Image 1 (cartoon, rainbow, N blue to C red):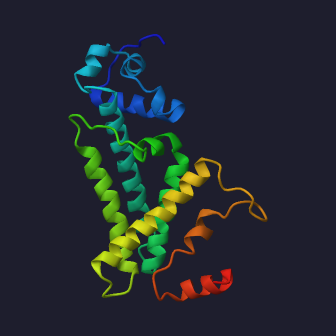
Image 2 (image 1 turned 45 degrees about the horizontal axis):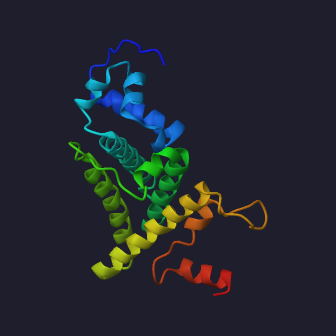
Image 3 (image 1 turned 120 degrees about the horizontal axis):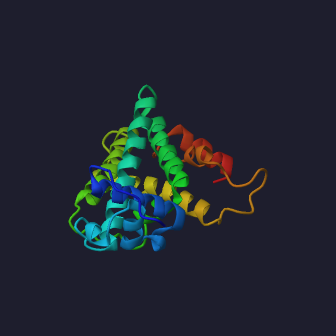
Length: 210
């Protein structure tokens, strides 16, 4: 690729943007500091002034991904603010699934088996913690009053596991063999996400024969 003149005022942000594009087109394996430098039109030495190693750049990319996920959560909460707490929780789940399926390469960097080392950038953990709080607060609002902290934490993990597992199964092409038009859509899956004692849980149990 021919190096083009660099005119951006924030080189670090531009490098992260190029990293994002590479992640979406080629996956984390296709990201390298020299490749990002070529795409941004700067020298490799200029990149190293901002990122010590490839993992530091990937951490910044993952942090940008979590920021996008948090923005999607905020929009979903605003759109569902007049709905019941359980409906707001499901809206978060749907926002999570739509974000992940819309950005599969970025999602794999965000939730890969080995989180990138952040280097000098500390925003990744902060943005990931924000996402956890979004979900945890929605679970607290939807679960019965007086539910213990341990039970709420378990419910938060279970809720995240539902949407994360669904996304991974979709991305890996593992949802096959279902009747009708194929695998259940996200809204149908989330309709079965219910707190203890919720009438919907009993109805879902009767429907499935359990």
